[in-house]
Length: 460
Image (cartoon, rainbow, N blue to C red; front, side, top):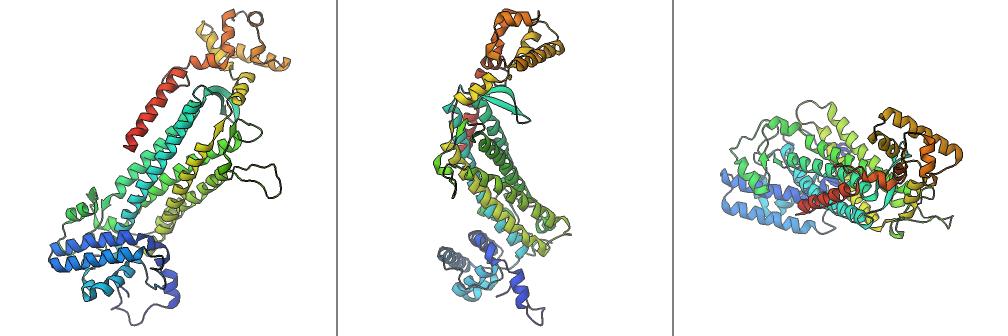
């Protein structure tokens, strides 16, 4: 069946029907479409289009359709244009001519917006749950190695020593912002469009606030033309999804490197790695590489819808049917990547001695030495120069920080005092960084507790 046709002398060609049909992907909106139609049936009763008995009959029929839709063969052989026409056809099979009343005062434009918002609202809630589980795994991994010292990098070169939990908390903050973006997106998604009609508003005096309450929306839309034209909320989700995958990809890149032989200070579990069909020794970080690859796919979904909407005039245009496949795919890839990332984190093991040795053997203490001199009264520019000369001399001699003695230090430059030899140990430098947000042990312990409190609040 079609929801239109009186104005046409002939029907659409087989090619056009095949090209424009969307049931093969929008079928996942069926539960949302049924819920929205049930709420609309109640609205039709309130304006006198349906009697109470008719409304009850319709709602019971919709319940039957929902139950039947759980059968894997439900969609077999369906030739409907989209999920909305399929549901109305099924309604006709169960409620007879009464089904023709369900579309009174309702446009597919607002129906599509409603269904997609209902589906996306639940998808965001599920994604937030996956994100919280992943964050919990991250914090547990931080707690597992509270005193581990690792190199911090800039330009992929060893820069300054940090605590392992400080490094993990950096990613926690990234994903906390992702969580915030998803929450903001949910608020914009959770606005009820029914009553907008095709673009000019409905010709029936529906109680839009009542429909919003029936469907659990926080508010109603303010402009009917905007409803028909708007996919900003879908773009908001795609932006949030893309940014989350960006952060997952950066974490994946780190751990691919850190678990490789050249770094060698992490071990990934057997359950998230794979071997080689030719090389028996290989243990490949496939799970992380796939996460890194999924990021590009979600970035593409964002770009796809962004470009699709760029040239569409007010209000609805059929181009906008192209919103769902990128939206659905991005949601699927985000959920799958978060679940995979959680399992990777749960399986990951740090080899604390390896990064600690890297921190001890390199000259990451150079900044600590310069700051120690500055605290003694040496102008920082001069202190920087002295520390730089010390590093150069050490490299020329093949000398590591731990090989310097207090006497040699004083002999190197008169600005040094014997007790400054303490700053040649990474842990001493970290203990000077007890500023909020720094890598000092006390600051990190407080930040970890605060992060855990935030996560408990989110999960509650």
